[in-house]
Image (tube, rainbow, N blue to C red; front, side, top):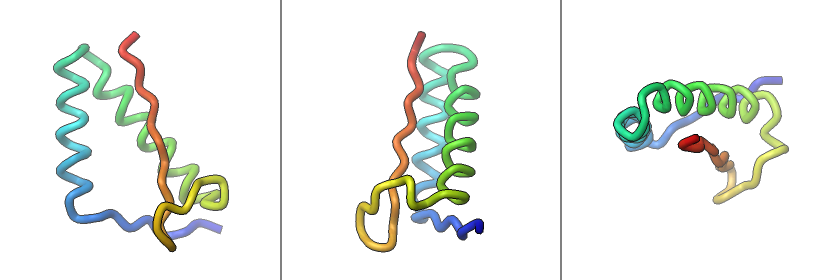
Amino acid sequence: MNYQLIFHPQATTEYTEAYQWYEREQKGLGDRFEGKVEESLRQLQSHPENYGIIKSPYREVSIDVSLT
């Protein structure tokens, strides 16, 4: 069962800023970040029980994007 993802209004702005920051740090790193975010969101949507509840009913996913 897939669940609906709901984003805080500021999340889109933060996501765009993070993408741009990663790209400035290293060419292509923003794309890697984007891919990791998309994969994590698919996993969260498919299996929310695998992720911690930060404030009911919201769950949190950490994204690891290394600079190497």
